[in-house]
Structure formats: structure tokens, C-alpha cells
Length: 132
Image (spheres, one colour):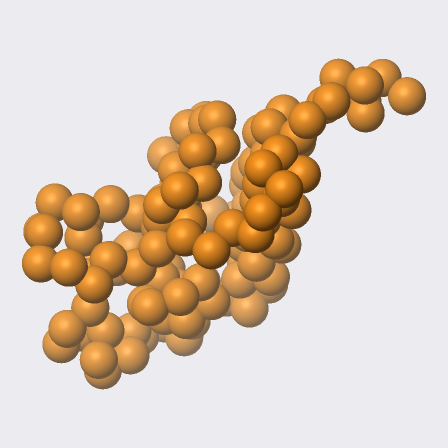
């Protein structure tokens, strides 16, 4: 996302984080989303269509909220329980994306590495995979 949210996001969108994300941060987030989808498939043998049905441990992920419930609209679209960082988007991941904390590159990389570990722990046969 650029530093400024889209006009529609300002007028009609859900709350945003305090900081817009850069392209490289968006790429990290997009990779995490794809890994979540992959692990969900391996676990359930079906495509993840609705993020609200994800139910992977230590991961909060939800679709953009189109409803009128203000409490639901304030929830982030992506959050890992180990970190206070919250990712928000406008309509879908990658669009109008923002985050709650301003971090340096090394903090983003640490967050990404820990997020990958959390996602991996949801993988069926995780212990077999890491002990090879």
C-alpha cells in the first residue's frame, strides 16, 4: 500500500493500521497467506475459500468484513498470537494493506520467521518433517 489509504477505504472501509506497508512487506505477507492456504489444504484436503473457517492454531485470519457489526470491523485481517503486529487490508490481502507497528527490516524478518514456524506447527506430521 502506498502511505495513504484508497479513497473508498477512507470513506467506507474498515479501520486501518497506523502504517502503510511497502511492497517487500506485502510480499512477506502474501507468502504467509499462501503457506496458510497450503497447510490448510494438507490438513483438510480442501481449498481454503473463507479465511473465517481457517482454524489454524495461533493464527487469527479473517476476510474483509462487509457487514455492519462495528466490533467485527475492528478486528485485524491477520495476526499471529506471538506478536502484537496486526495486518489489515481493504477488500483483499495486498490491497490497501497496513500494519499496526512500524518496524525495521530485521524486525519484519524475525516476525516472518516466527510466523512460518507457527504455520508449520499446524502442518500434519510437523515433527516428522523437522526431524528429517
